[in-house]
Image 1: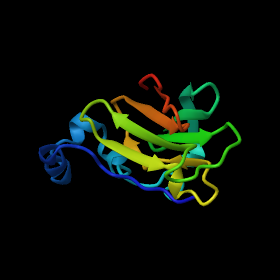
Image 2: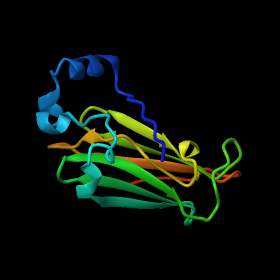
Image 3: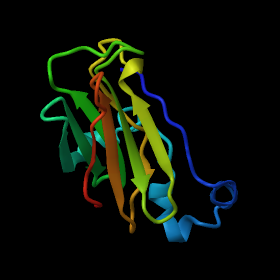
Image 4: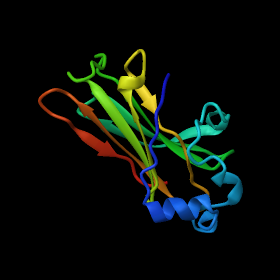
Amino acid sequence: MRLTGTLMAGTATAALLAGGLLVGSAGTASAAQYDGTDPSATGCSASARTVGSANIGNGAALLELRYSSGCRTAWARITITNGNRCVAGVDNCAHATVHRNSDGAEYRCYTENDPARHSCYTLQVNDAGVTSYAYGDIDLGATSPSGRTGSF
């Protein structure tokens, strides 16, 4: 599975994070090392569980907020569950975003980047001492339903 992530925080926030000045407000320093990393590659997915989910488009997609207790990180995962494959630019393609509430940091994934075109997961955010939620949508041609999880 191929994933992509884009940090969508403000320039000032990004500069402060790079300088380590916001580590205290965004969680612990040990968890901060995982910001923007792949939960599978870091091993964080081994201690992960789904802490929130949303059914999108009457069963077309399942959005999940995943949380790693070992790494104290969160990420979003979306799976197309209607049996249809994503055809980029046509329909049945889904997107998921993880959003950290404390500073607005976000990472997004697109099912178009998955060779099987049925699921994707975002890079992870430090979730130690703060909360995050997942947001997602799916293009069903005539409609593009969306949903979000609660914060955890």
